[in-house]
Length: 257
Ligand SMILES: O=C(O)COP(=O)(O)O
Ligand SMILES: [Mg+2]
Image (tube, rainbow, N blue to C red):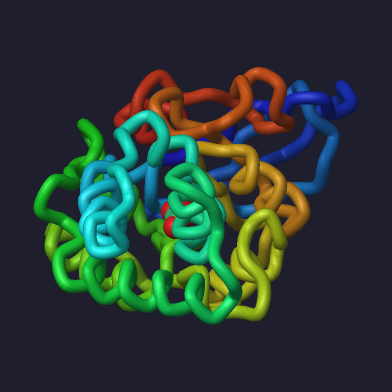
């Protein structure tokens, strides 16, 4: 059976909260929140910094591009701070840090070259964070629909999920080039939830940075949780989430009793 955790910053009172499990809908009284009852049917995940530690492969692709350009390489902490706004911003930041951003046409050529390098092998140095595979299995076994909403372009995203053996866990995947806008826009989150066949207030979002929290909040999901280990660029406790997980496996504990 599954149960929610209280939301932060909600009026006191009481509410009935329903989660779906194998056994059917489960209703739990949450005394800290007066919102309407709502069954949780889906969990949406960010990718980089939440499911996968991917920064080493991003750095590798960036440094192959930079070598071709005759520029110096970037280091891991720098690339880590560049991730989260999608590949075009990543490449722009890499170029800005190594001599400057060239004219638009040359920058576009750099982006295309970076993507062709990265998409060819996005997983050589990347790994799932501890507990990810087992926890996804447990949530799926509990009857929840799982999806990915990332700012990484779709081609690389699908390859990475496949390489790491978790592509089959997700009923829907949305990338940074799936909609006109990316996170922090709510558009890709709403698009993913639509593909999963659930309403926003039937979903939990799990992410690692400020864009995840902003996008999920704006989309109106029931709960926004963050992992403690990702690529956030601001302190997690300054963000309007509903809780910081102890680790990925903590998600199963938080959603079950
Ligand atoms: O910026 C990216 O390319 C991906 O970032 P995300 O998976 O954390 O959204
Ligand atoms: Mg992320």
